[in-house]
Length: 263
Ligand code: PEP
Image 1 (cartoon, rainbow, N blue to C red):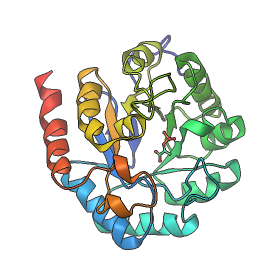
Image 2: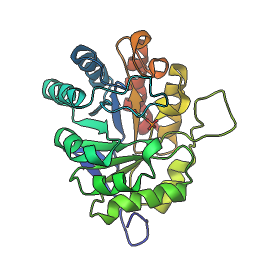
Image 3: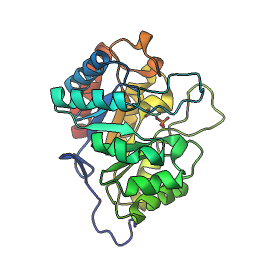
């Protein structure tokens, strides 16, 4: 179902009217985690000023340590919905448990399935039935074929509004948090009709890598990028070191507005 075979044209996924795929280069930006109404609104305004047309933000956070901030849950979803009302930006937010899909889908414009859950088949199937577009991140240990098979689980439930997101894979290299597999973009686009976007924040794990990796993603033909922004990264409860702030946003706006036209 997600294979390029039998699909003459590439799929354009509409997220509350915002297109991902086709001729578009869609910027999704926002805080890694929803922390407070003020922080989320400020991050959303930063994202919008940088040219983002969708707001990201996690209310359910899949953390490596059980002692780390796990997200605000439904209270976070309510904050996201309020911020959508104030900014007009549709919401992309992660769901980590099949039992929460219905609730998250009642707030979200797009469901995000994270790297750690790429092969949580019950979650994929529930997301496929939720009536919302789904962003499927590549498992950090998954091959491209396994990633596409995971997408197939969603598609099998009648939902072809799927966006693939390359977010870096585990390699021997320790200088970056994960290794951004830039070649996955053209490979997945050749094998599948689905749009493919890149997360330069979670792959590099460092603020100063986000803009270079964003340029690389656009240059290789990604259909969009998803980046973390935070008004005060030094106080962030999750992934502050990779969040863009201040002047980075102006540069991001410039990259997104001008680079696609130069290629
Ligand atoms: C995220 O985008 O908030 C996230 C946790 O990403 P990943 O699943 O790629 O680690």
